[in-house]
Figure 1 (cartoon, rainbow, N blue to C red):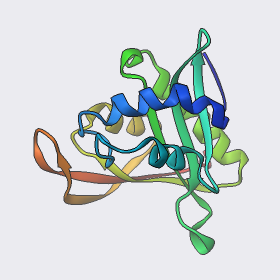
Figure 2: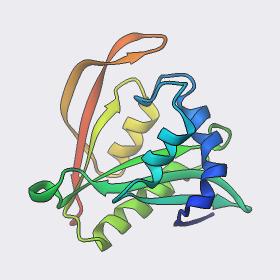
Figure 3: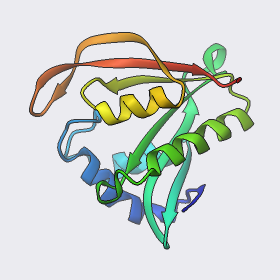
Figure 4: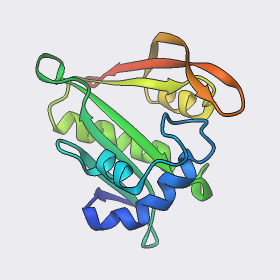
Length: 162
């Protein structure tokens, strides 16, 4: 597997992954009917650095790296990840997570923060904890899970210095 910077022409292959990931409305704040244009802007808007994971010539995952806040908070990174559901459980998320941490360090970030990790997304929570993130806050009942109703989301954080 290779991870590289995404280019706008990759979005044709990224779009079906995005659609599949958000379709169950269980792990991301996006509605299942999010438009192509809105999804494109999320991955390729101003100030966004997006990357794709490519396996055997096929895009199987993607992540974006951005400042968590502007100006006086821009030393902390934020990121979002999606793995093709057909390729889950193969270490793609972990590989992208490690790559992202490395890219964030190279970009000069001092820490990384995830603002909205759905508490019921146990695989994501476990992965981020494995990669050194801690839950620093719980946002009670802030996500409308399609099947479970209102559930909590976590704020997760880690410094990028070892």
